[in-house]
Length: 261
Image 1 (cartoon, helix red, strand yellow):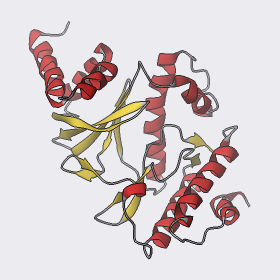
Image 2 (cartoon, helix red, strand yellow; image 1 turned 90 degrees about the vertical axis):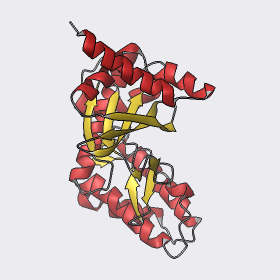
Image 3 (cartoon, helix red, strand yellow; image 1 turned 60 degrees about the vertical axis):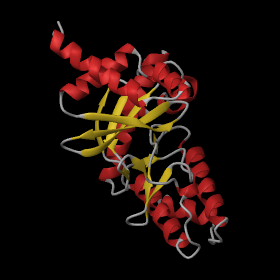
Image 4 (tube, one colour; image 1 turned 60 degrees about the horizontal axis):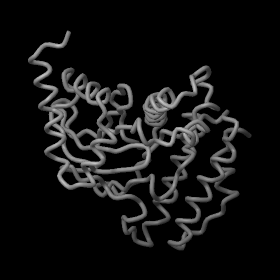
């Protein structure tokens, strides 16, 4: 039985969300994202000290929304919430069902989405352990993932596509991203599977890339691993060719997969 005091605190957290979602479009986001079960999970995270204050939305997508929060222990935190009502679980199934880590999972919509949050947590942890710069994952509960906020004062670092990298800096960025792709493949045994200028942030302080959005990332023994890796390579090559970087896709593939030789 939840005490009246705890229920009051949960009401305060819900009201805090509502106060920060001001315009009509954000109100629609609220109804899509914050169902009762999600709000209870957020309350539990707040009760355990993982969240001390909630901020507003910093990113919206078809599958998930990301909010800014403050934690006394971690500082600025990103709260990623997968939407139970609107997430495209049919697309998610292609990445979940072939993953040996999720053998036997039920194929119902809710089960797939809840597994997706756990999957991104595990992928981020494996990537971090392999030396790839990613948001550090803190904890996952139900359809919620708490992780390091890549930004300052509630403002996220820019995506690679909008970071206005100078032409002379482009080769260094390209080499670092290929290095991260290699570390993912060789040490984390992962392929991002959706890598592009949209899923890479630029840390302005260090002028270095940060890989994000790893929910769909698959293990190297996934049935579609080769296809996903090829797509990642093609996306990165396409972007950097526009910045006049000399790129050879086959050489990239060979470098990333050199571990197999």
